[in-house]
Length: 308
Image 1 (cartoon, one colour):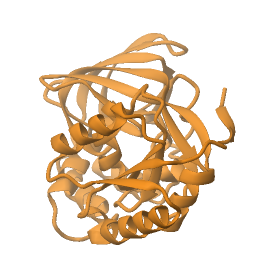
Image 2 (cartoon, helix red, strand yellow):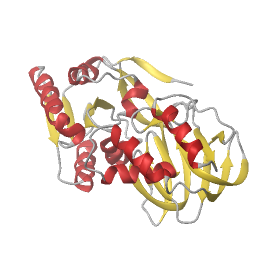
Image 3 (cartoon, one colour):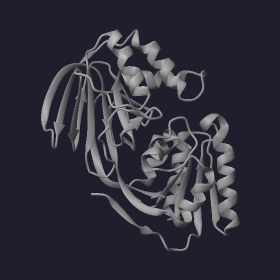
Image 4 (cartoon, helix red, strand yellow):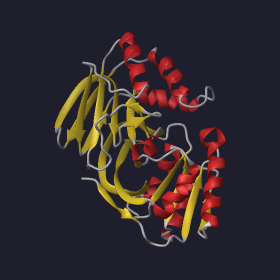
């Protein structure tokens, strides 16, 4: 059930604006300036956070959240959102998004326009809504939240390769990284134990497994087409063993944001699941998340967001 409230009528006094100046090839820096100027001109006290590391950004946001600001504005992409989920989860402090990164999949899911001025309006007159988060517990890695998609296998390797690439810029990095990884796109044996509507244990050779709280990742690639971010469930897409030629057929459709219709693709829904496969890397919201085995679960209503 969608949990959505009427426009917030409370007075907005204090807002934190979190920025990754490097997001979107520097676009975030200008976007943040626009947001800060508009909020300040409206008489709102603005606390700016642009720390030199993810860990320090997270700690500064945690400190601000303890003071219960009226909103936290995130100027960047899904990676920056992921960085600050831990202090925001279950805090009740609303998050306003300014999509200024490469993928911006959470903003796309919530219908937030790619326009910095809209964030100031969201803070003052946006609707408060709670959405689910996913919670990962990977082997050899700290537990972490994710808002969009966690993945393992081929797509995780693509994301990690794209993150290492300096060129090309923008979404095309993912396409180039995917083509490079196809040469190594060998399926591995997975064990997937699902708990919830699709309660079963699956053992299969798979190229990738994606666990979605939302529908897209990588800048609009439709990997979990039926996912809803407020239903208390995670959608699981398994792409089984396919040839390199079949991958070259699937990839363009995925990159274009089209639903994948292929016999090797299976989809499930779960409240929680465990995944294991030898040596398979994992990512969450495009960020490194260790290696398998891991467990993942849905956390209903864990994040408050401001939407149009």
